[in-house]
Length: 113
Length: 115
Image (cartoon, chains in turn orange, red):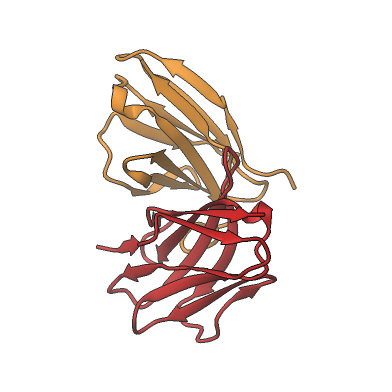
């Protein structure tokens, strides 16, 4: 089975712009979770989608949003980018979410200038 | 609120030796799972081992084993016969049953295996 894929792998944006990141889960997985990884804050949970519905959300401002499509692919969007949004964004998929094992993609490295 | 703490930011070990990475966690929930993930330099995060809280038996996966002390809320990872490929950042993570799809991570331990 193919693993979790994320596109693009690298992205450079300027402050104020918006960005959309994409995640394709492992075939058959219906849950997708997103995380932000920074040297200072570590790995922080953004949100989780299951069957096109957001089931859980972390403590991030409303500029961070996401969605999931009927084929379980997910996108996350960050609007009005700030310098502090520079990070590695990881998505992970699992069969049904909950406490099931999550399998991670390679991440999208976002640099905001 | 749930928390995960890894008190060793960096560790090093000689090839073929054994090393133990520490992790403590806090949750008031009774139904939860614990994980160790490995993130090699510039490579993606992979699962090392998983432990269900309701199981008393410690999980093992080849050279990797855990010491799960539920009462002490401790979940350490032992790597036996360390190999150069074990060099990575190791993260301890907690998933609580009623918090769907959310992993709570520790700050990580950077492990270097030296030849």
